[in-house]
Length: 225
Ligand code: NI
Ligand code: MN
Picture 1: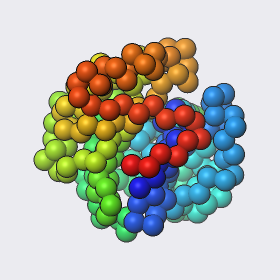
Picture 2: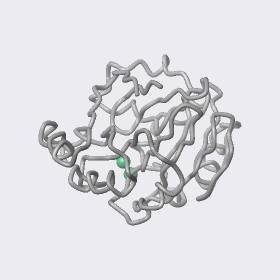
Picture 3: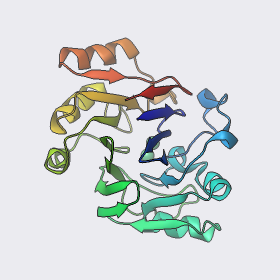
Picture 4: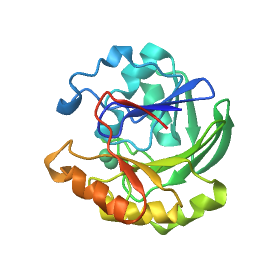
């Protein structure tokens, strides 16, 4: 299974022959200026919450690719008003898609669309893929609800924010990795803005000390998991 990182909290994962794109934010991310947004393919676009650093390119990529948008009911209403026709509204709970079962799960954060419209509750995704099972927490602080994840699935890897300030930092993410019983973490939501610049080596060392691995992907990099 391959994961391609497009910067900040935007990444794509291919599972069961389907391309899943998460939280498209490339335009406006100075660090991702070399990413060609028109080359990004998607069958599904999964949106954790409505903040601009997660939805800036949502409508344009959804329209170009025809990918199905999977998001909170309120976010789906918002994209539909902008002419996106292929969208699947959810609230917290499971649903069986053709790429596998998906749990939309709570996150402790906020969610408002860039134009001020309410975005529903912020969330994260647990993907029960045919090849691998993985969890993307979305923007969140450390929370006890993460302890439910091992009841649902034995994770192969997880994608967690590590930048702090708006989300968990590396110390919190180490505890989160314990909660979800996962030793391979891909760190995201770091370095994009001044508030979330991190020391990469220090963050990796914290995971190593806990017997875990933290991967901090380069923008544009594809990693095999
Ligand atoms: Ni956010
Ligand atoms: Mn964010």
